[in-house]
Image (cartoon, rainbow, N blue to C red; front, side, top):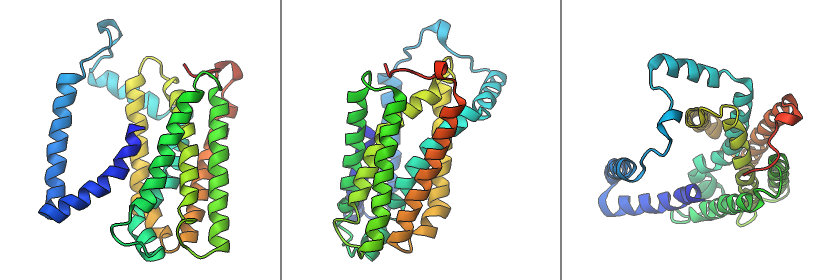
Length: 265
C-alpha cells in the first residue's frame, strides 16, 4: 500500500521542484533522498536474523545460490507472471504524457486523472489481499485477482472499440486492473519466495532484478510501440496480462497439490 503512494506523489513533487528550482533540482533531490534512505536503513533497520541463520557472503556461495535461483523454472515462471502483470499496467505510466495530453486532451497539471485511479486500485487491492489472508487459499486469491484483471482488460478493449477516447471511461478500466493485480501480487510473490525458504532475501532480490529488467523492456520497446493510440495500449494491457496468466497456469499445473500453500499466514 505504501508502494502505491509513490507514483501518485512523485509527479506532483517533481513538477513543483521543476517549477521552483528548475529541472536539475530533480536530480539533486534524488541524491538527497537516497542519502537519507541510506542513513535511515543504517540506523533504524538493524539485522533481525539470528547469527546461525545468516547466509554466507562468500563470492562462491553467492554465485552458486544466485545461479540456482535464476535457473529455477518455477521461480522464473512466477516472476514472469508478476512482471507481465505489472507491465500491463506500467505501459500506461510510461505512456502517461501521450495517453493523457495527446489522446485525452488533459493539461500538464492533470496527471492525477491517471495516477489517482491507478494508485487507488493498487491500495485497495493490497488492502483486500490483507483482509483475505487466512480466509482464502493463495490459489483462490490469485484466481480472484486474475478474474478482475481479465474483466478490466476486456472492458478496456471494448470501450476503446465502442467509444472515442475521453474521460472518465478511458481510465476506469485501469482502476479495476490495478485492484486485481495488487490482489494477486502478494500470493504470487509468496509462492516464489517459498521455493527457497533458506534464502528469502536473495530470492526477493532476484525477483526485483527480473521485475526491473521487464520494466526496462517495457520502457524502451513496448510502451513506445503501443502509445500511438488508446486501442493499442488496451490491446497491450490485455496481451501482457494473458502472458502473465499463462505463466501462472503453467506453474500451478507443474506444482504437486501437496506442495502448494494452503493458506497465507
